[in-house]
Length: 404
Image (cartoon, rainbow, N blue to C red):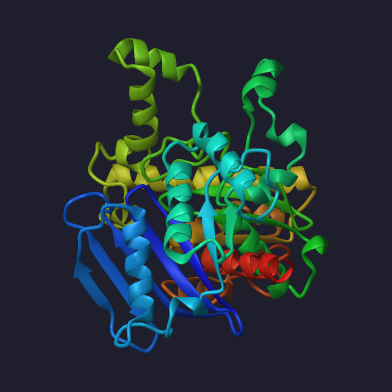
């Protein structure tokens, strides 16, 4: 079975084609600047040279058509015809309370994705455009599967997902913690269990997805128990451009002082804060922070200390809430490629029985391998596991299509 995985953004489409007989990636690429002048298309079939071109794409349907043409092209492709694509799996940001798992797309699913536009105004409409574009280009007979970022977290107990606001806001508007990066947290928690030689339901894991967007999840006996992101991806850790958790009273205070509207303060918190805000607008890239910190930049050192403190606080808190933890997992661009952060966090978590092997830790850098970076006597294992959300989406798609 061949599965095409689509991650559609407002002006981009990322994709991978999987041969699910062996879970190999056959091709991958990206369409960028859809509906904008200067569109770019990048495509790479395994065993062939990368193909790049500038091309105008007026819609997501244009992008999907370009992808299918590249996949079936004799020189740069990897399949003979579109009919070889058995199904398409789509990343969808927000499923509200309606979906605790992945689903085959039908009219009811589309309506539910639309109902969640209010929670994911940038992502959900783009995700739906990707689904509709694939239907238009590939036809109604090719199954489409929606895999929700929020789905994995629907197992959280009510005392973990509720906010202490008037209960009517939950009843009227669905205001609660939903959590995100669910596909990543699910993938690495399953891999952690496999690395420990255990079944997922036999262990407790704290998974740290750290990148430009970051979240930490408590996975208790294979199920999401609590997570740092909330109603939206703004809550929790400081991120590339997001402030993370702050005193809510700060918001009206700044609005009054700076004469900002609700939309403007939302932009400040989501797009002008985090690393970008703390550096005075210079960068949102943690790699710049690492370099600056080593060079003695006090602001960069502050950011590193803030992030390590927050990671430690959440990991320790989640370990306590679950009644213990068997493994801590680092994944994502920062989690997988920053031995310094892992070392600092591990040192602070020594009270849990964490002992980092610094030689192993230093090796887990810009690699696709999985690592246990603790010493043999460490009571809690610290694992570095490159996340693979696309493969998780492909697996869900295959399972649902075979069960039809």
